Image (cartoon, rainbow, N blue to C red; front, side, top):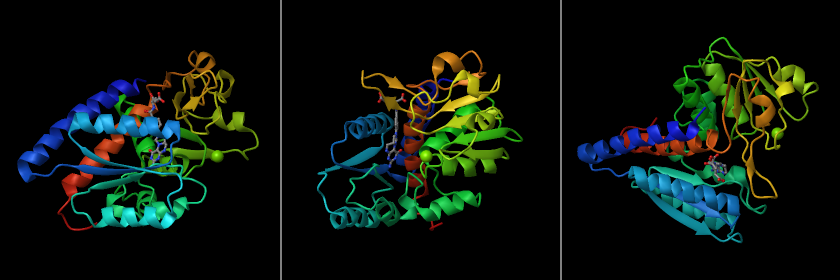
Length: 282
Ligand SMILES: Nc1nc(=O)c2c([nH]1)NC[C@@H]1CN(c3ccc(C(=O)N[C@@H](CCC(=O)O)C(=O)O)cc3)C=[N+]21
Ligand SMILES: [Mg+2]
């Protein structure tokens, strides 16, 4: 499944919506991005986001804060953006340094500006099937499936990983799409028995190539969320491509699968927030 190509199509559509927003309301979508410290992987993502935004016509306001920044100063910056009517979305790149409480920071973002969908209010709305903002990676996966004509309705969906960023919101999205959902994780007893049941398998563990051809049902759709940089510099997913390719009906590549869709969904959500701006709260 070609996430890179679909992401390009999504971004081309967004560019048009951004132009229309300017023509009709003179609004330019603005996204505040906050990156703390100098983690090289995070810098790559922030750069990719900025590049994508520029092409679409979204303005990004980048904040590169030193790893030593205090939690209080970081919170103050978020409060400023919360109040600023020209900022439609706020993204704090995770992970944060150990001395900063990630929950406190993500909960400080106004839910209506929470482009990542990590705020408990947004997570709660998502689980009740009345979403305002959706976590970008799970949303990107749903759009990828839809683009390939794969409906989760009535399917056995197995999600490996239970993170707040991917696994848990993925449960809600799949349930909202009428799938039968199972979540496996590091304490699951017979992982292979569980993954082999899946019609659609979503793997988000951060463990390089942990899922092999022997772990999946023939014809399964396999979504690989992993982005693992190996010591030799090359990138692998959580799924072993060589052994899974021949068994699965569809597989998302790494790179070029879920990653580009994540960025496209971040852009989409920013545009949606800008389109809603000025309307009554939600
Ligand atoms: N608040 C927050 N929101 C996030 O959405 C968020 C975050 N923090 N912290 C880090 C993770 C990771 N993440 C990725 C996004 C795009 C690619 C991506 O585009 N990957 C390319 C390859 C890029 C490369 O070469 O390294 C691909 O898969 O083709 C990867 C990873 C978003 N995250
Ligand atoms: Mg885990």
